[in-house]
Image 1 (cartoon, rainbow, N blue to C red):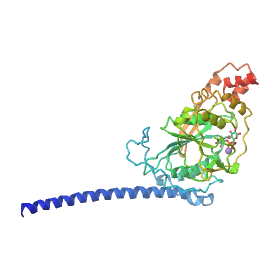
Image 2 (image 1 turned 120 degrees about the vertical axis):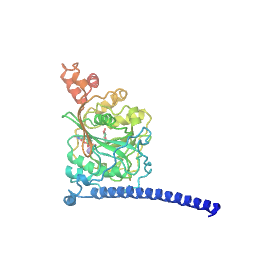
Image 3 (image 1 turned 180 degrees about the vertical axis):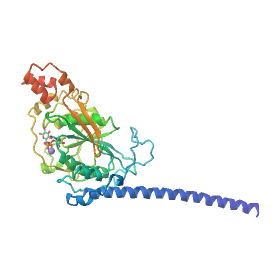
Length: 390
Ligand code: UDP
Ligand code: BGC
Ligand code: MN
């Protein structure tokens, strides 16, 4: 063989080798893609189907999803401040999740038993989830104030987990339960949820959510834009229309940055009403505008319950709090944590909302009217202010 043809042969062999290596790499990548997307699709489909189950066919499906057959999500990777992940090279999820289905069938009655929910809602301990094939664009903590509403809680989780999964969020559900029998303090429970959740993970977005509200359309995305977003725009209980422009109750989204800027919620609203209006005032004070999705997406069903007892002091607290917000909020938050545990479908935070300072404070002990007020509103200073103004 001449030196020239020997050289041409070697070159050809090199080219064949290069093409083979390239083809092999391509094949491996293709196989990986097919495997991950197929498993993911199957899982989402399974969730969708299970979400559609009524109690009538519950018995037929109960027991089919044993712990060992649950499809596992990968372990949580640590996320940096800017959202890039450490130890994984997964691409960012698409801006619009391809898993959205639009209007959803809401399960309003007949909550499934806990063991069925735990077998069929495919989330990690503590009610945590993140998409498999991509890095979520949003790290979202759902904070729910709670006491004595077991049926609502089960319906909430049954509806909400599949909804949030389809939005490809990196999320966790925190159920913040008020211990004891003092008047319910929704806003302080939100502050407690914020404080406890940031000990667990670098959440960037908070959804403050009533347990009895179930969204009817998954295009109502639970993320945090630059300004706060009021989510529960159209609720069946209010005939699907907004009761008033500044309303911020029900379900709302605030970024961590904005929440800290306004010093969180007020801690002094015990009993029903006013605490969300106080938050609207805080937002306005900081030039933050309440944004909303269109009514056709931001629709909710409210699970039925008896009306709560209204806080008769709420209007005067609101007025007094106009100048108080910088010292009443997350910077003055004081509570007794009783339990914090990662249950299969949510993180449970049980707390006594009466601040330790109030109990230690002996100034009011000789004044029964003041004592009563302190117990009701949880603040010696505010109670004194009421007494002097009434
Ligand atoms: N809540 C609760 N137990 C109570 C009172 C209130 O869990 O005893 C929580 C629950 O999340 C509820 C929210 O606080 O959805 C708001 O209270 P409620 O539903 O009574 O007020 P509404 O918004 O319907 O007027
Ligand atoms: C209360 C709010 C409540 C709203 C709608 C207002 O009067 O102050 O707390 O969210 O009514 O029910
Ligand atoms: Mn309600």
